[in-house]
Image (cartoon, rainbow over all chains, first blue to last red; front, top):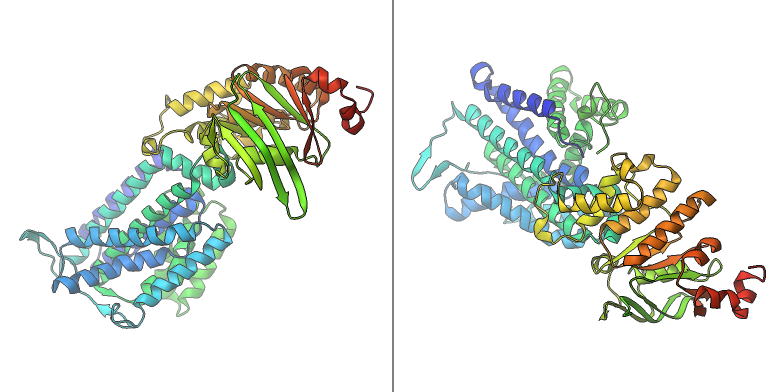
Length: 319
Length: 247
């Protein structure tokens, strides 16, 4: 998996700046749309660590996303009021990461198609923990109290009027931080080992790498990052439902990564914005939104072998 | 010489087939031990047993005196056993250097994993040293998949060397090579045996007899004969079963 070139990172930084300035020129609706895209980007980035990083295809990713979202709801219920984001964000990260730590050792004994199936099974098991149970609060979902930006009595009040702008900036901050962490991680020895596993897992094992442990570390980190994405979704929507954990959400994230490009770390960000945009355009021109989405993604995957991130003028050098 | 790797009564059964039966051998640093025999004699199975790729059905494997029987391949590799594969087994889309570097990295303690990879990293230094030893220093920045067949065979050994092992298990490193390349390779093997314990499985008898210090001849999974190249050449049993009478 490539990381963006210095010029690519500059382009990403300019795009981030354009988003950060949206409160000055965009409508609340468009700011909310950008937030939706950024949360999708966080979720897809978490999957990219597995897919582009170590070559693992997982359908359990949405379960960790959903756990992150439900952690906000359950924390609020336990506290009897809206939790502080400084409490709910670590809680979501921890819960999702721990779930991945429990599932990982079993699921990661398989690979390829069988990993797809075991992660599907574990993901659906978690789905049914929240589907129509007292814990989840019903099959149709529940409205939750948003976490507040406050700690120890000091805080910043989010009103209905400033909410789209505030959430836009918070989501941008979280997405940027997540990208920066993964960008650094892929440059460490750990990141290089993951790429080796993606390229030739058996050879890595024969070289002396503890492949299972490396994969588990990636799986837990990806789960925790998905939990962060889920937390941000709960914060934005003030609503959670069991569908957040469903496997089709994992499939959607796979589509986004594919659309953006498996071979590049920034692919999922491009993919998430493109996917959100396609959905929006599809909705405005037809009632068959999914059909438009499907056709565009099909065309993109067929025509762009390396996804949107592969659009470039020169051939990249070997890694 | 004390052996670094010892196999004692090693056997491996695949269903009804006894692929390796009661094989014992010692590998010591400074010695090149060649294993020869006809196809299906169990040579590759023996290498896979020693490398931890397969679990023995019976017998013991010791590395530096420690019992490592039943250890998985990555733990064996970490104990100082490097291997090359009969069929080239690399990361084709990565550079030659990265292929060798990942092997060097495998030996590093886990606490180094979150260190940023720099140009002067210990793993880079070890990989470069291994690559120059096998004669691939000039090709280190090329994608491994673009190497010629002979270079790929060199890379196989380079990967095994990069982890700075004490033992080298080389499974037909000369497979598919021309006579000229074979000669260069023979010199390399001789040179490697100076500071490693080398187990060589090879079909090219000219090379084997030129480089081996000790030889084991296998037939139907068993050790037929073990001794110096001269003793093997003179052995009537080996001549009847494998070498023929022209050698």
